Length: 123
Image (cartoon, rainbow, N blue to C red):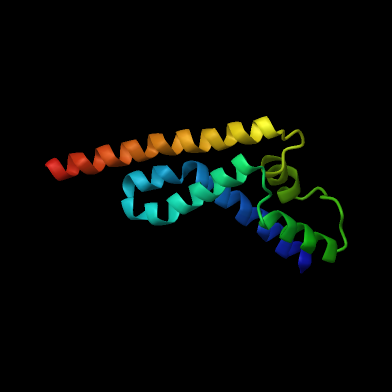
């Protein structure tokens, strides 16, 4: 059961990262989602800029230890998602670049959302 919980946490972590990076696209079509997306982007950027570890990481590791495994083995989650969430050569510079990328991508999405909203308001 602990392995399932740990894998579910990795999936949640991956989905949260995807929402932080690309959730602005949802906001273009559903502007009210900004109330959920903006705090997520803020958290994601702060974690990267500050060099923090997401609280899901130690929680997931805790459940992996409870499950009796110290390392990831060959299931889908370990094979495909873990390298995306926990890259091997993650440097401080890479973290800052990722934080900037999140900010830039979302500025683009929010500019598109504002333009779309203004065009609807004018018509």
